[in-house]
Image 1: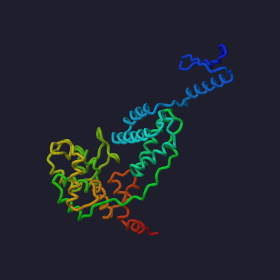
Image 2: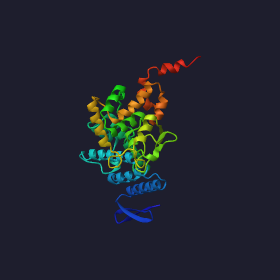
Image 3: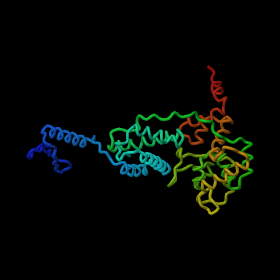
Image 4: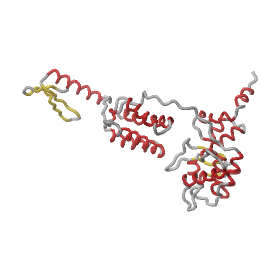
Length: 338
């Protein structure tokens, strides 16, 4: 326990903290000195009990947080956190009195940030950023740097109704393939017949090809991991024939002319050019994944199966294709005979 002492006309508080003796001058009031000592003793008790909150400089905490997530999330997610934190820092520099410490960031300030970002990105992007910032401040609470999460009571922006995904008709697909180079034809057919994401195709290696089971293994790699986790993708005859034609049998399945991993920018540019020549509007490589799912649903494949093939974690994501199968609800009811 500490004590208060008087030297001349000044009262001092005298206490121990982390094995060190600390003496502080308080003033001429004995009562205030007693209150100051009581406050110190309460804080020391809270610290020993694990309840002590130690504020931290924002710049220092950012570095600590990024070091933490680099070992807990995949590189692409880390990259997004870095981008979002940079957006937050840029916003804070526009304020007259930018907050230097974590505790200075309040809910009204986060609300300001939300409205600020709406001027640059879509509402769903702002909502994603708020989710990331929630984790950013929650970790600070776990480290006992702040007492509350300033994003806790911030309401997300109401999501607009999602549009039906763009998929290619059979006629568009036939026309598109005639405008593609031989190497692009193989990539387009692979995406159309597997529903793989671009990153999954780009990171596909020959040791991921299982000829016996006739499946492609979507696996975690050293510097990349699939969005929906690992899964198996069945190979139909189109895929098997494409892979048999490709000459190389080691490293990446799809490569550039020099043998390096196929790049997104070059492939996307070639795809856009082929679409333009084929007179196809509003299509991206991701439209091929939508086309895979859409044609399966229109062929009568149930949504649960499509969801599994796409690697969706939640079947609600797959429900965007439900409108393509207007008879699936009627078919389900007709199976009853009560």
